Image (cartoon, rainbow, N blue to C red; front, side):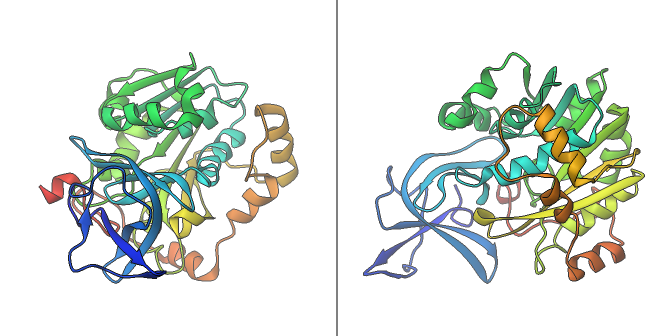
Length: 340
């Protein structure tokens, strides 16, 4: 793995310092011992650090750098291409927000297609819906799926569920070749980075020509849309929102704070049918449709998540950029293909 993506530094007497040479994951022995830290480079002048107990897994696949870290504060965390993807203690916030609003806004969701989602958490949440008959999870990276199946114990039951159809393929190619249509299509993709495997799945041509034709008439599309904080929402969030607005009649952006991401996060939900945002009706649906209790989401919290602060709302209203293959926006960082 490249040192740009995954770096460590040590602490002595309670003071953290950068050594003259960063210790990369390739150079470090397993396990990483107490006193080591993982650094995620948010931007060229900002880093987010996590104290580690150990490194449980590290490797590089055909598509991505992969690491599973045991952190002191957030438990097990999945890191891909140097970016925090999911933390054991708060992943429920991200995945409840990604999955349940779209399924609750649909009259009777029976099948779901998940683009990405290799760790299995999105599938886990979708399978909690009593009406669900089939969940297709399509991830491009066999290695990510294999080690998540092995190490992320919270998702073992989901991976074993007979309703789950796990496919290893490029989601674009998989949707193109499938004849069936879906009630819900979910984008649980990594953030678009230069050299990453999935930035083309955020483009207008993909949404318009490939994804939308695979939705049923009352179908709903939802995607994670990157950082949505006051200082970060212009990276990709506003562009993804504006791009989807060019394809669907009803488009809804919503946000939530995810502590392990060190930022507010954004999602975009879209359909050609209007959404019901009545908090009482949503609570009733949650009680009737979902097995078990949600930890984060209820009707009122979802409704409030759609009310954006003035700065972000103004940007979304005025955004003109449309995401295309030739005019893409990226968050800070690089994928394997770029570094090679």
